[in-house]
Length: 258
View 1: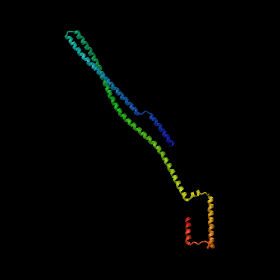
View 2: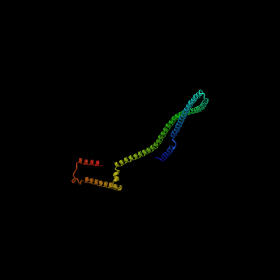
View 3: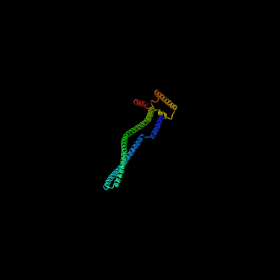
View 4: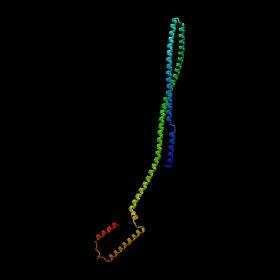
């Protein structure tokens, strides 16, 4: 990996570290969603409390209405018995209870109005939560897809740098292989020409030339001797004569050796 490739890799690593430390938008969406659900739960609990309180007031109202009816009966019975004082007292209690019933009705009406407002708020909040949940899941899917795409792109960038290094390594290997093949062919060629035999000989160049000169001198001397013997016929009797076929065969053997 070259210097520029290393620098690019380091920069990408530091940038990814900073991004990882940044706030995850999906976590923010989840937190907002949970906050809305908590608010919705509070509204539901408030509606439940109002409903319970309203039921209690309605029960109290029914009891007061029963007392009012009872005071009516008491007043009628007192009148029948010519007891106006008792009838008056019964009617006074009736009026007090009727005033309490009116107050309860007012409170119940206010509770019903508040309850209705809370129900409307709950329905609106529920609708917002459902809509937000849909958007949240969509944004989450988009974010995860973008994150995955970013990781793939980053990986591909790293692979590209590595592939460049691999390509350069392959080129170097091919060059070295070509060089080795050329050296091998050159060695074979030298071996065929006998250069190695000369190189491995203990004699130096001068010695080889002197040896070749001595050999040529000896050959010439022996050749002259043969010529003189043949011409003078000195060893015609002493040397065994060879027939022409034997001489030809020996000459052919010499040619082969050459």
